[in-house]
Length: 345
Image (cartoon, rainbow, N blue to C red; front, side, top):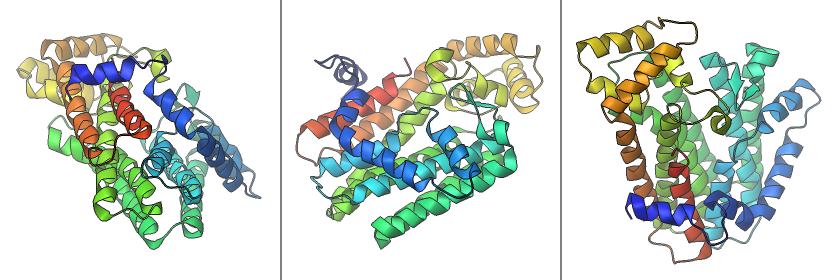
């Protein structure tokens, strides 16, 4: 499927709904049970724990990782209940990583709201993140199998490795595409892949089907993150919950910038070094430098190249579902892949 054909499937559903809306309709009852499990498992006699967890969990977001678990379980015909608590545990792991990320990145805002560390400080954020990790694995012990726990333990280790790798290469304009993709595969795709595979694990699917679901989730996660990196240089604040150029101001080497730097002349490389490595901007909000950065991205076709990469991984995600029979669920999951990429433009 090429970019143009995928666009029509994602944006022209007969009922006018997005693919994400269709997925919510499909597994909405299960998602309500997941949300209730999340609320139940946040309870603690230490009042700060549910208070902080609720702040982040209620801040928005699409619950895409739990939805992948619910959607793939439906795709393979699972009719039990084990995927409910496991989907909730996946959201807890994701929430814990967000708490830790915001501390590491010294972030003040997420989805247009104050971060937990901005409101309560770094120490409580780290400790509540630890609590959520522990609670997630407690839920896996209750509802999972050795395979689920092994899968999620590997995913959590991979996420941590990705965070450390990103920290070690931060603000380095020598960063190349393979290093960037390694971070994306670790930080984002690992949990997407695990969530999608768990749907097959609870249904006791053959290994080749579980591997296909894992490939679907992993490639979707990469496409999703690449689209996010595109968004930082193109979308309105209302769509993102943050201002354009946050990655630029933080000196993050994302795919659009890496591509532009690879094409840069000496003058342009000096500009990227000043802004991204040295963090020396010509005005307090870096508005002038951001405008110039976006001119350079346009000059070198870097945003178009970013879109091409996103579609490449989206195609891999779609192809991973080829072995499964055609169904409403398969169609919706395929459309979610397209939606995840095309929300960027």
